[in-house]
Length: 284
Ligand SMILES: NC(=O)c1ccc[n+]([C@@H]2O[C@H](COP(=O)([O-])OP(=O)(O)OC[C@H]3O[C@@H](n4cnc5c(N)ncnc54)[C@H](OP(=O)(O)O)[C@@H]3O)[C@@H](O)[C@H]2O)c1
Image (cartoon, helix red, strand yellow):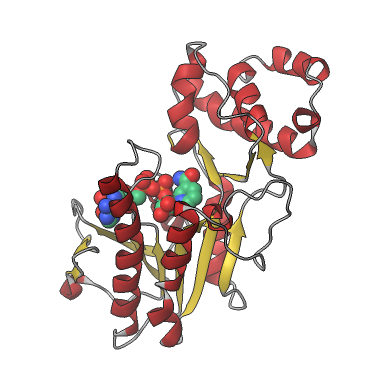
């Protein structure tokens, strides 16, 4: 299968491209900074793409967007977060819809931010959108895939939770301060967070490409969300499994003892371990 990947130079994309190649698929990266033979240059906000270098794709995975975690949210940054996703997705969808042979499927990134903060409420793909800046961006981002949907391209909007990987995303940002013993609670430590380990996410994306019955929103998250308290506990003590074991019995917090937290802790340990030893993560 020939797959087009936008945002292929980012945290998720840079793992997804070799993951696809290992499975015998051919990949073309769509990027603002082409650097390899076969790369397709584009500027999604200006609505420009080097269509001549595009080989007709059977599937498209759209991951491009201004980084949310990096830097202060000034008005200019918020505009880049919104425009890169909404205008970029609309431009890509319209471009795919206009191809002589459109792809069979578009898997377009979205985020669990779609739901906003909802406390104890259990959220599924049928739940409505939340309030706040990110929730509004996610709604507009997903709606911007409409030209692809109208053209009959099977379109999946992947509402992804916090992605845990050793060399990018939230863990990469938090690990250095926790390794120095400087980590502390994030917020009140009580907000729920949905998460997914990077290797699992790569399989979820491929599953969405291959499963003809999937369309519309798909939550890409591990089964049980956790509060940010266990995030901190895992990161602070995750480098000493013996200490972590003790902690299970000393911290009287139902969230820390929950099954979801155990899975989360295992994912953190799995991902943090290789980095501690200087090795790389090998999602397979
Ligand atoms: N990481 C997470 O925990 C997480 C969770 C939920 C959802 N997501 C979503 O999943 C997607 C991929 O996430 P990621 O963590 O891999 O992102 P990332 O590392 O920030 O990479 C995103 C890519 O988007 C392109 N890009 C960056 N700024 C841009 C801009 N202003 N305009 C157009 N393109 C721009 C860049 O590619 P080029 O420079 O090659 O063009 C970059 O490599 C994003 O849309 C993100 O919101 C991520």
